[in-house]
Length: 286
Image (cartoon, rainbow, N blue to C red; front, side, top):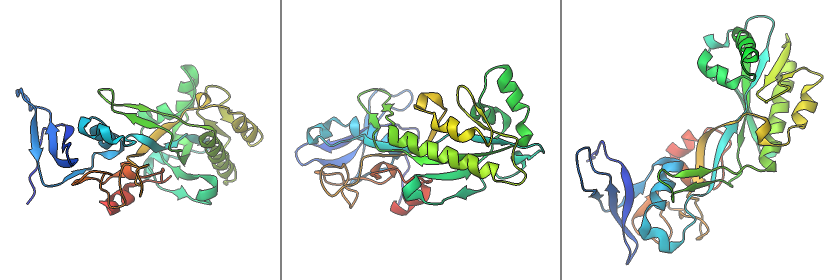
């Protein structure tokens, strides 16, 4: 039998400090209520996602003495858009938003290439240029094919529950930038190898965004920081890493280290980013 409590926001877990046994979850008061209530059960399974689960565990003061690395080793997938501008209309908006992907040597290269296309307002956010330049680029909307290298980040970021709401500290390094640059170069290479070839390729940089077969390699190689190019993130992972020892938060049976009847089952237990859409993996674990 399943009972659903709607309109409640989990605030922290109820954990008995003597044996670190989880007994329930404390929730925010309902609208018009005054006291925070607790929903109790024989076991507590946290599945609030990579951000929410770390925030919930981190706000649970009873767990603080265990000194678990809650929120650490947070990672995600990130992309940077590449637009190929063809002479003839492509009308990518008539097809599937995400229709194809390319995987060549993921362990070595560290990226997957995905095609995608969005309605005008959303697609405009992925195009480079300001004011008149952006308008001129948007006027080619029907002529673009768009793809992005999807890169699994290194696990150096953090979900920090000391703040309300929680904050995410993003830390990307040279390895992440190198993977992105390899992915951008390969994506441009594939577009320019197509028949017919696009007249140019656009990358979302602050300057020199219009690339040709002669210029794209040198331009991408010259990127020396993430401040030079737009990226967006998706698929948050990590924060409560699964590990056989206490260097992680969750044991291989998904129970939180040094506790009883407290489990975490979601993408927050991933030790590293998968580098692909993680939904099937999350569902298989659950």
